[in-house]
Length: 399
Picture 1 (cartoon, rainbow, N blue to C red):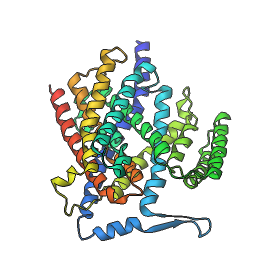
Picture 2 (cartoon, one colour):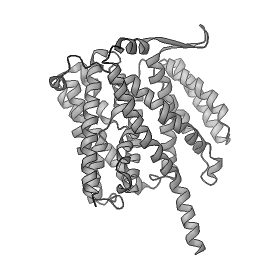
Picture 3 (cartoon, rainbow, N blue to C red):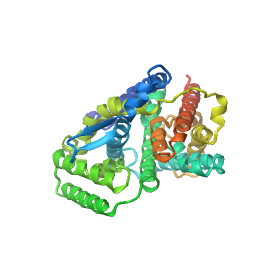
Picture 4 (tube, rainbow, N blue to C red):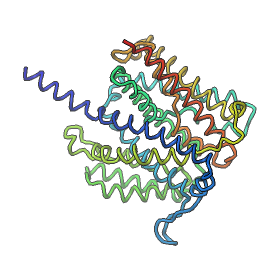
């Protein structure tokens, strides 16, 4: 009896972060939807000019000589999104150390599914844009999954969705985001400044030293992390990568989780990211003028490639790769689920939304005339994936 009580307490302790995460992300997903609707409404109202002017206006932090001057949209996309990637990377690190993907066999299904979910959408986009050299740079846009939004949709189905499917979707989306981070670092960084690259290396070595000596106070990590962000920004590599590098050096105590700096930071930052940074990002990036846009607008190569990549490529890539992994005994079916519900979740991975918009802004930073097409394609593909995925899972889990 005592052993059973201990096991129950242990299970509750292990599952607590997941329940907290799902509750947070689902509520955030609904807030993201509201922020996007408001952004689209404002950008097509009498306030549209004010909306876009505010995003283009500049804000300075600090003095003239040593301050940081960026436009509002860059404060959101370069500074605040670095915090988002910091949190995502903390989650990835925790999952690999002791979470659902700490065991290689457990990790295989979402990893293989994520590979398919990044590869097939990219191929579809390239196929549709093969004759448009200027737009091929957007190949990675439909490869991303919005964690908060996809889990928000899944949460609307309540307890009828097994925990294993939620964990599968979360792990796959996290791996997707890791892939997006790598893509950003390799393909969407500017001309590299060697001096600042070396300063980045010095900062990283210092952070590794803090980890090695088990410094459990966040202040020194924060100070060096701010310097790392500046060095990364000046180096030509996208500044959000600094958030990833900082997160990877944060120590985690598996034996005494109350003393784990990683877990403390994850819990402290999550609400601000979920209910502040992500809705603000959606509000700043989802605004698109619908003047002159009709069904034929979706047939242009950029929006068509993104829409088809998200809605068709994602579900085909994730499901087919997952199906083969299970049938070939590389991985196992999530507990208490069936093929139809797994297919429904595969469709939900096509909700690229904030992550796809983020990659789109980087892909066409030098060709802003394509950004409206990016937004239209992302919104259309994400909307189709939301409706189809929700309806199919509802059907698959009907009692």
